[in-house]
Amino acid sequence: MTEAVLELTKIDIPQPDISHVITEDNQPVDNLFSERQMHLLKDSLYTSWRGPGEGRPFVAMVNVGLFFAPHEEPLVPDILVSLDVRPPEDVWLKQHRSYFVWEYGKPPDVVIEIVSNRKGGELSDKRSSYARLGIAYYVVYDPDEQLSAQVLHVYERRRTTYVEMPEYWLDDLGLGLTLWQGDCEGVQATWLRWCNAEGQILLTGQERAEQERQRAEQERQRADRLAAQLRKLGVEPDA
Image (cartoon, rainbow, N blue to C red; front, top):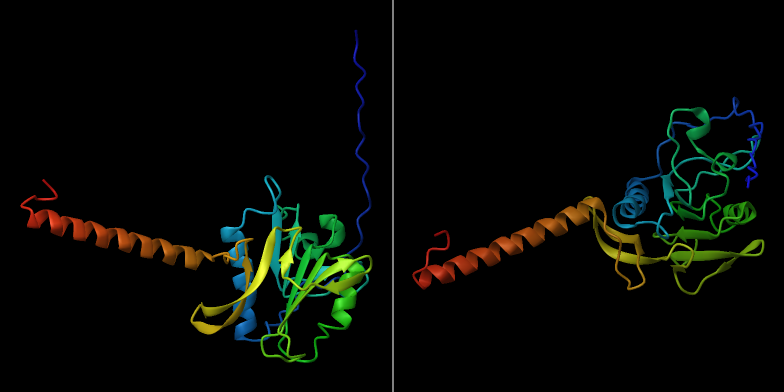
């Protein structure tokens, strides 16, 4: 009995011409707080999150152009997170230097904007643009209350528009967002952090290292106390 084998022929789909596209404009980030905040969100994801599920990769990018059409100006979110995609092998190719939707095959799942002034249109033009692109979650953090007295807005896309969520849980990711008061690289402030279902924040690499250092110090102190007690009993700990 013979088995029929179906051979699939790969179809080469013409890629858009992006020779005119500027992927880097050499503009600095807004301010010290924004710089710290962006990297805090990105670092904690790569350090403490395994992704949305077993075998499901993700990418997180900071201040990278989001191109959705070859001849449209890109949006540049402060941070984006895209599920079920991997970073390209050769990041120096022009088509890999930014987030081109046609290269990744999908829009990002989460976009976060950190408000630093009243000119960015985070609650107007940008919100409409991200909804049009089909991004599932849109987050606006306004720590200095530039736009309103509400410092955090979390939106979920419903049909073709965004609906503000009363709770800051992003179900597709299995992650939430919370405000946390503390030190980030020498700056004391209120920071936007990722958290799990129990409300525990996702730690950065530096925080994990400090946590391990404290644990090791506690173990050393416990061993020293035990050794002192043994010596009082006439027992040499190292014997």
